[in-house]
Image (cartoon, rainbow, N blue to C red; front, side, top):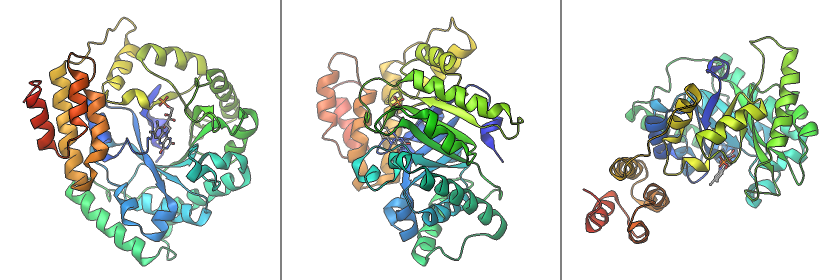
Length: 369
Ligand SMILES: Cc1cc2nc3c(=O)[nH]c(=O)nc-3n(C[C@H](O)[C@H](O)[C@H](O)COP(=O)(O)O)c2cc1C
């Protein structure tokens, strides 16, 4: 089943963000923003192949997040083959291949955005991932998957069952997609995008920066518009069932910008990353604006933001207890901005280690609860 083609356009999705979009963040975003599609943080295929416990925790998700896509990164086609099978076994709606991460630890090995320089390998990885999905559908899990990986798989299935996630509802062939950038050290979409198209991933998401730019400067929307033309030309030869969807991404900060960039790029949709920090409502805002251009978004009150921040805290604590609270602190800072006393409050929240401590600090600052 290819959910990408069934989504109403324009598709507005949550961009994957390592260290940010973990299961608790995605749950809150799904509940209060309802993006059309959600992607996990990138997950190492090496870690999957070796059965690393901390890697498997990245597979935790809730039913409310559907359609949810698991994103994989690495360099070994065989590991992508195995990783795709694990993603299928865990009931995800799609599998995405990271060809955009600029981090030195990833790209210098040739993974992530490093693959832009090695299109042959990039194509082999897409083929291996697709094969993993189809073979899993026809024959079940491959014998090449090691025992430690199978143990972690079984443990994460128990966790998903406890959370009420229906990971084993139906056996289906899930779509394989790619997320990438506009080039390595310079924009090269006219060469790079056709290489990916040769393997017909079901969806291509493009972030409008090169690897070299990391997250600096502005996203290049003229390059993203060029990608729109390349993919539209490619699709012209195809029927509805086989056409590739295109998601453009980079610096969407408001509903107004979203509208403008959708029109400019000819994309089927947008992915939103950093603008979701402390603001799951951005999806609601964009959706309403698309329906009615006169729509004016009413900012959430401080009480509403605190209530959601605490719900996020509680879930984060439940899923990551006890060592993981440090990761939650930045989210608190993002939710609680723009009111008198916010700076001092944020300083104190940065020292908290549990939801109880957060509630205590909030009460000391007399902002709530
Ligand atoms: C903290 C952080 C982590 C990211 N992690 C990933 C990732 O795991 N996989 C991925 O494909 N992109 C990742 N990205 C890139 C974003 O998905 C997105 O492409 C980029 O931030 C541009 O979109 P934005 O301007 O809406 O934030 C990350 C970005 C940030 C800021």
